[in-house]
Length: 421
Image 1 (cartoon, rainbow, N blue to C red):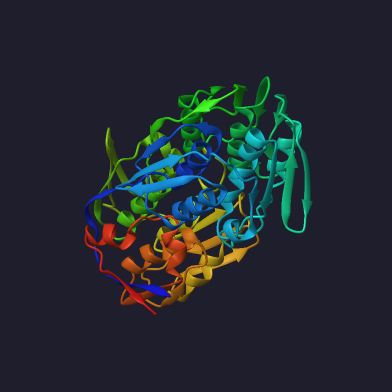
Image 2 (tube, one colour):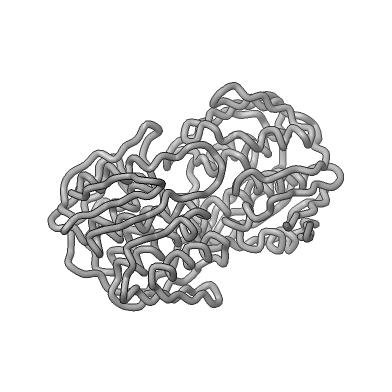
């Protein structure tokens, strides 16, 4: 098993490019492989574990894929299988995206419950509810979801869950509705940039989706979708992670290939904490000319502060003057990284869905363990700011969502080495 050895005390300085959005690529690849008739070509695709895992799922269903030089070629499935078995789906939660498209295309689907990061329960009830609204009959038996319908029928539905809109359910039901008979209206739809990117891709395939970027999506069903060519948007969470990395090391970093519109709440909170952001048409320059201040953050669906940036901002606030409070309202169990940061000298107390962070002057290197994708990212960032050496285990979590993370950071001044255990 691989580890990252992070030698602290380094200052990041230079330009760091942002890869394509993992969260956009995954549903787009599903749509291309299952819904389209004809080859699709996707540009700006990161070479990540999650992307390659999904390729294996799609190839297991009968698709042909090839990833070369950040371009993913997808030849749709000629003899489509309706079953996505446990061995294919268990590694990644995003595999649930095949459920809606399979029912829309074949009239039936059998999909294993998916796996993913250990950040608390993330039910799929909204996926099931949405398909039932479209006329599918859905049952759950022995760890599999069975869904069938002669043809899905458009309708109006409210897809909001207990913690707000669901990105996964919005994407799944939107894909299914493109081939439904009639018009579907999704109220309470997720508004994240990668959901909008999926909608733009579907329209390029011949779908008819209105209201992109709003909480109300209107999908007029069509009979066929065709292959197309599309450039995936940049990864806002990777960009936010590197913005925090620049700030925590008191560096001077230009994060290239991101727009302020993709990270409104993250930008606002970094500035509130004392980070200086200078945006232009191609990215943002991140500097920290003054002491970081403690702030309060509440995670929320887009355009609120993303749960996927909660761990990274916590690392920065560990070194802030004063006390910060982070309220996690999306995944309430997503604080496993707090214990690892405390091993490095942080002062974090947990109280249910809240984390109280009392800023300290310094962090110290320590052996730590990544519990999930974003937890791994914050441990790398904290390790760069800490005194001494930090050894981050379970690097496979990080590789799910960050393309060549040590190479990108080393190019701008980090000292990170990947080793086999």
